[in-house]
Every structure is written in C-alpha cells, then in structure tokens.
Image (tube, rainbow, N blue to C red):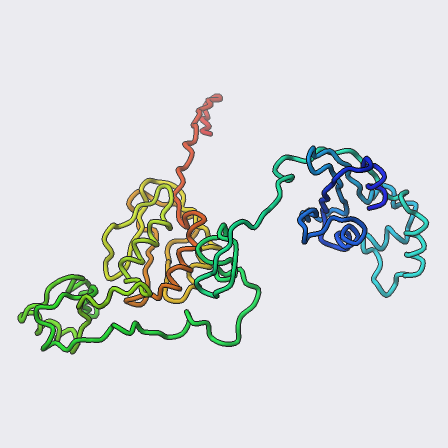
Length: 359
C-alpha cells in the first residue's frame, strides 16, 4: 500500500500521511517513509478503515490507497483472514503470506483526494509550564493543570497523592466559647432539631455576643472557628469563595444560581422551562476531585422555571489550593448544566366526516 501510494506522488514532493486505522498500517508508514507520529508528519484517524493517504503538505493534493473488499473474492485466504471468517488456529499462515505476496496491488484501489484545511494544520505543543499538582512540564493550552491531573491519566500511584491526604489548614484552630465573645464567625453554623428544624443559626461574619453563648451550647458547640485575620493563606481557599467560583463555571444557558452561599453551598435553578442537559462525564470527573462535590437532577429531565436543579460546594471549610485548581481546570471547557428551550409543536386540526384528528 505504501509502495503504491509513493508511485503516485510526484518526485520531490514534501508529503504528509494520514492513516485511517490504528492497526498495523501505521507501522509500515513509519518504517518505509519519513512520516512518523513523533515528527508530526503522520496523523492517525480512528475511522477503522484499512487505508492510507499521502498528500502534498502545502497544497493538500494527494492519493488514497485502500484494501478493496470487492477485489478480495479472488483471494479466499486473504478474504477469510481480513474478515475473520476463520479462527487463527484454522488459518494456513504460510498460504496467507504467499497469497498476500502474490496479490500485491491487485487487491488495492486508489483515488485522488484533496485534504480539508483543518487536517493540514500542524499540531504544536506551544508554551510549557510546570503543573502545580504533579510538578511536571506540560503545554499551557491544556489548562491550569496538566491533562493527567485533570483525570486523563491511565494509572494510579500506589502512594496516596498529596491532595487526597486528610489535611487540615495549619492556621485553623478552634476557639473556646469563653473567648469567642466579640469575634466574627468564620463559617455558617447550622442548627438541627430532628424532624422540626434545620437552618443557619449563625452566619459567616456574624459577631458573637454574650447572649449567643447559650444558643451555641444548645447546639452542642463548645468551641467555634473565628476569623482572626490569620486565615488568609494563598494555599487554602474558603468554602464560600470556592463554591461561588465553581458556580460561575458550572451554570450554563438557562441556569441561574444563588449569589450568596448558604452553609458553604450554592444552589442552581432553572431560568426557563425546558430540558436539563448535563455534561455527565465532566461532572463525574469533577466529583472525583477530593473535597468538592456537585449533585443534581438527572440528565434530560424536563424542568419548569424556578425548579431546583443542582448544588455545589467545597466539603471542608478550607479547600487545598491544589484541589481547587484541579476542580477549576475541569470546569474550564464549558458548563456542566444547561436548560435548553423546547421547540413549540405546531398543532393542526384535520376534520374528516364526524372525526377530528389533532397532530
């Protein structure tokens, strides 16, 4: 196939190659021509067809050679092997090799092609940076962190990654109630009475008074976290800040969200009647990041304006910056939730005799 294509490329032409299968044929192209995956002159498209294309890298004119099924009828051994009509044990391997050698170009077909402009572009890695999670170099165009740290890695480390370890901000220390008067609360605190009440009893930034101590004790609190101005560490992101930034990326068209986090959580609602569309794969990847979550209604649910759709939050009070960056990088490629409008159906009435049909 390579030899046949080379015969139809004008001498001296600088050419690139496209292979339409990942099986076997790319090896022949890389062995017999200057085109390889490494230098970028060979592109492999997962079309599953046993064919190759050689084309002028500047003009895009070229030839496509393919194994022609219509020509295999005269070569039963090749036909049975190619279409897997025989098991490997039943194949006569020596006869197969002899048939392929004898058939040569008789089982191939060729036609001229013009490559589309988008397939002639050279893929360049571009500027590189160090990934803040793994510390390895990667192309900046892939996002704030490398593709592997975004969840595309094919392996797991045996040791626990640093962002999955149980960690606590070094500056976060509880203050006993007798020292809390006059201090500002660092986070929303929830009061729960089973079967009766659940809600925010103290909001972030609220100043604790002496009269609040009894209520805190009734809530089972003997200490609380307060904002002592030592909690602003660039290596940690507060739950409210993280939730708001997540929400801005998660919400797409037809989706609005609460601007003020409640108990560290942001809720999403439908802006219009329509169908909820969820990017399930990226939602799952997002939820695999330690310390973050987003959950909501099922994909393709019909919703009405004002319906609750989903919610997101950072689970710990302070999220490690590494986990925050990883989560944000996953959200860079578009929203997770959209509400698409439904097309209005046209209703016609057909009267035949005494019967009325609507459709």
